Length: 114
Image (cartoon, helix red, strand yellow):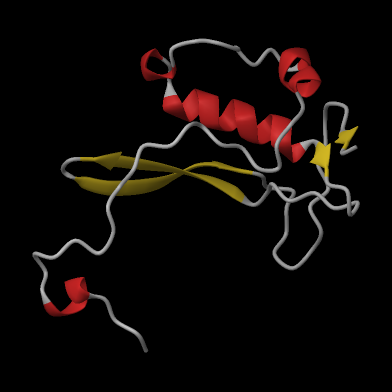
């Protein structure tokens, strides 16, 4: 097993945190975002992270990948990073999803990757 310096010295930093743009994979096309009412060009710092996470995941959940599979499902975990630490909490579960079974979104129309 490989260890980093933080395993031997708890004051050492294993990795530096770097702010990244909002990323969403699988990446929905702008048409899907607009059709779902995703707000484009807004100040994300003034938005509700939980609501935005669930909105984006529902858009992604309905997007069939090029291999014919759906990859968003099971449960949604909101991770929050602050100067005081990292917290995670499950904020949504899709009760129809089953471990070991393919994800089959229900409800609104699904879209297919190009």
